[in-house]
Amino acid sequence: MRCMNTIMGTDAKKAREKLVLSEIAEMERKYGMTSSDFWTKFESGIMEDDQDDFVWWSLIRGLDAVRTRKEF
Image 1: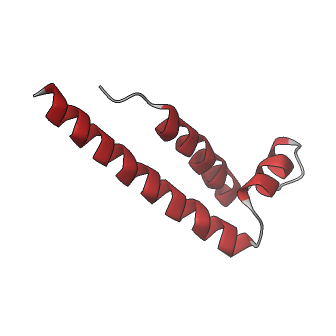
Image 2: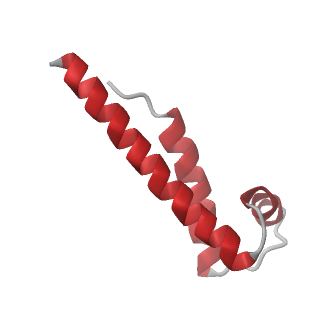
């Protein structure tokens, strides 16, 4: 049973990562900049604090969380 849970967890993790990556790609297309450039500008206070900025920031942080989360 543990093996099945690990496989299902890995598949779910990949699905979450794929979803977050597609949402990040949409933000990059919409605003014509990479997430790296956005992150630098946002963290330095250059970006306006509109809702999309916070969504994009959250997506980047969420991607990091998905990638570092341990599946048991």
